[in-house]
Image (cartoon, rainbow, N blue to C red; front, top):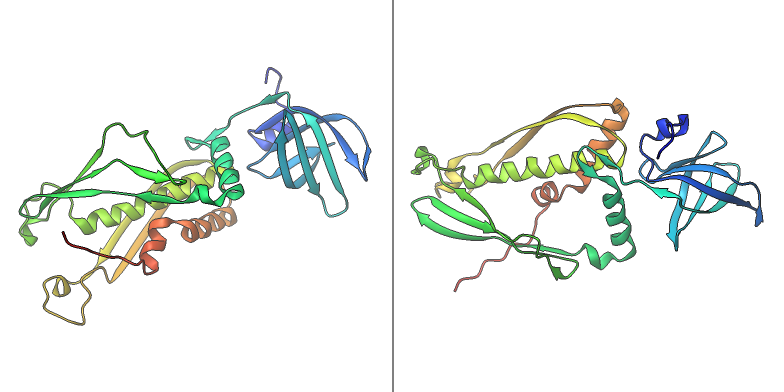
Length: 267
């Protein structure tokens, strides 16, 4: 910003809208003009060293408007944005994350997605899956110029050559990968710095179902356990709330915990 960080900036860590001059309007009349610092992620802003929680924030034609309530009064602030700072936390562009959330909230159809994969058998228990195209918001994404390739095989105990993980191991990896993204993205959105994150997962089951030896033993996992360890600057209460939100919003975890219609056709 070109100036030394104020206590307000230090408290907010990385304001998205910063160093903006605004004129508060109280009860429909101009009240005073002063400097404000806004942070969409923390959902707080300051006026005369008083921290408020915002209810609404919008920007049109270079003008920012914040409607807030501090439990005693409601004020509207209008002002020209002098500078905007894209903030990054945990390697996540939080500014873009917030913009994406706002865009989907305003136009829910933008949140529609379709992911695709194509698997070809190679030999024995080996197969190769290519992943490239996906649709988001009803339109194809063209950013992947080269497809990803995921190979799979079986261990010798299941007649494979051990050249790649098997399908259920890839399923476990999909879950931990999804949870990792959820933790990191949501921590960034909440202003929590993650310095280390590790997930260990195991799934237990019985081969009787897979081998067709039992009608009562399921072919898939009977139980899955994930152990997460990480270092962060979040309080225990904040981390518990973070994990509750991650469990609620993880696409892969949701797909495993709740039945998803699956159809199979032949050609």
